[in-house]
Image (cartoon, rainbow, N blue to C red; front, top):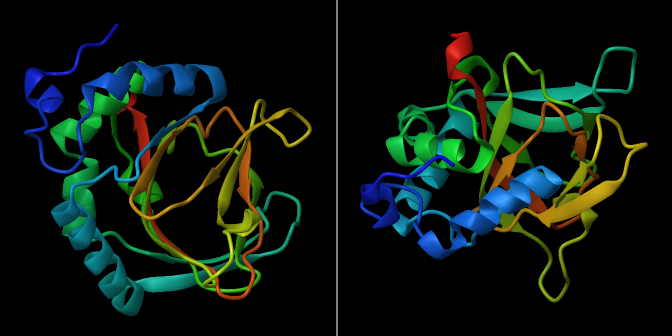
Length: 219
């Protein structure tokens, strides 16, 4: 079993909030259902604030809409993407994140920059359809939920959830629904297991950092 460096276990690495008592649980979650859930909170307040601030800036200066219907070879989706800034790149490539991913997944990974982005679900109908991630570009996903909001006095609906299936399609067992709460992280076996996000309803919004990783030995 991969061991984490002592500096990470003591919480001295920037970014992730270390809780050594939860490491084994996260590894088991990943092995049993393909998705390990950290937090909230998963990030220290400073890192969370910097990533959210950068996500807002990138939304204004480096974003594009991604809309497609369910056609052969296409994923049905409606959302907004933006290029990463330096804060996101520093976080995704940090020692604490790389080492923790190796501990949980068993893989030595490196960021796949071309497949990583900020993602925004801004209003009714925004969604991400059924898909598996491209193995060569996104063997493992690290989904960092930066800000999630919904109508006061209500509970989050399915639109703020990630649905993860046992196999490579929705015909297989639905193993977990994960609500994308602010400052929560999901480590996802997205290349092997189908996943999706249902459509948002009025009053719901989500901003996230979608980090993709490829196997280090394939570089």
